[in-house]
Length: 269
Length: 131
Image 1: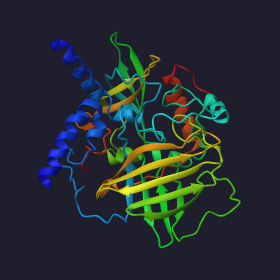
Image 2 (image 1 turned 180 degrees about the vertical axis):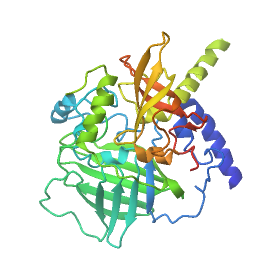
Image 3 (image 1 turned 30 degrees about the vertical axis):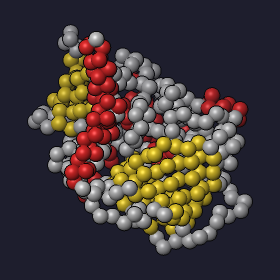
Image 4 (image 1 turned 180 degrees about the horizontal axis):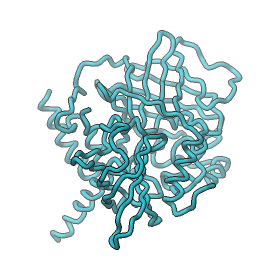
């Protein structure tokens, strides 16, 4: 088994050297630096998702600030108009300055919270799965008691989530979103009709994968199936989340001291 | 012919080396991630704050004039996981910082690596550090 893992790691490492960024290589099983305890192969319970998980993107060229997948499906005219207005700091339309709603501390919302490099903790109760995010100090609840979505939902930033197991995959179904948040870092929009499906799978002790499916006929002319995202379990002293609220004064101070000078603009007074 | 075969490898290696954590986390339009530089100077302020920790320092340029640099990096939580603390740096420290500079030419950058007066290095990878 160990030999097999080593062989796989070597093959993956060689292939990865050619196409993947260094940070990605460092995340592959068997590729941790010397001294780091690798227990990806330790026993685990597939249906136990509890723990503190941090997003490490493994998609070449996309960066960690991500999107469901590099290319979104064709947009409807409604979505295209919103996309044209967006001035994101990342992705194909990246530009300095910009009008990303999170710069004024709007809630980040789901699914975008899942793309941050900051971790989230999964906590399981008998009737709900909770996700606590370091970013924004935000949280969401996923009902697992068999209920369906309520009728006539009031649109919200996080939506209404229900979850169930499909084999070893935990499937989260969410509706009831407002259309104020960006779907991702690239300025891709979504509407109140967004139906989001998240498929989580604990592939080994240390790694959790996620595949997103975006169904939003008001915004996209086809279903948007995302790439597989990987989250790494934080352990020991690294299993730590700080208080990270979005504070307008802190954002403004950072904009004045770093963001604006970086693009050669003078400070706001 | 040999050269042609080697070039893609060099390009791939360069992308691999440059394109690591920093590009990944801050594929931000403001910085020139292809051309990292190293600056040396005396810290005037270490701002351990959200959304991004900042280091301000005075750096002498080629002509001996002092240039005030502003350097940003990750949020405090991510730095803690990479081995930093709020006391890692203090005003007056003579440090060396490898960073990607602002495309605008302003003395602003995004930190790759910090070398402290005692030679201790602090980076950004939460996977490298065994703290």
